[in-house]
Image 1 (spheres, rainbow, N blue to C red):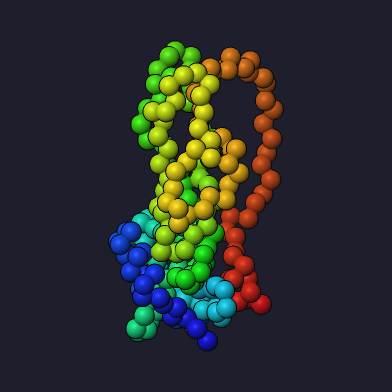
Image 2 (cartoon, rainbow, N blue to C red):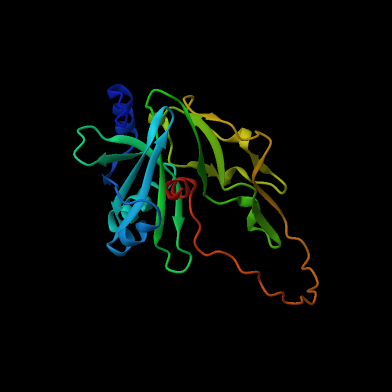
Length: 233
């Protein structure tokens, strides 16, 4: 059984790129529907899984989890400290389930990474600067994508990709995925012809049509992750 996967050289490169985010966790004995009791105590159930390792149920203090998720999102590595283990397990928060009423986290799936093996993930696009062509009346800025998919070693992960809007100087100019610039260590997997941003004339306002309200169907408020369902079974 393998939980602590480390590579000193790769981890060193990660620490140079950005400050390491650490999260203290404990192994979890409470499984299935009984995890409700954990949440009442301010503990959030989680699971660590990954390539060639056995899934490990965890529990995390809610306040600490919220702090780390705010910092890391799903795009930055998290150093999971599991109990008294000497070495942390580097991981990504792959899936976070939230209570839509209280906005509290319900469950987190962490994906364990091997620092010497490439991973595929999505990173956000951040628009910076101003598009000179958008200063005209009746002109709008269209954003086609807000994130793209990349592949790289965990130590080469980037927090976001900046899109410089100052290049849009004329009407109908556009920025495509193929125009984005990233480190040679990062491979962009999204279609290079996908539109990122463009300046265009605003479409004429559409005539409002009468809309007959439809009662929304009942939906389940709280959903369970694949790992949690497996635990109950």
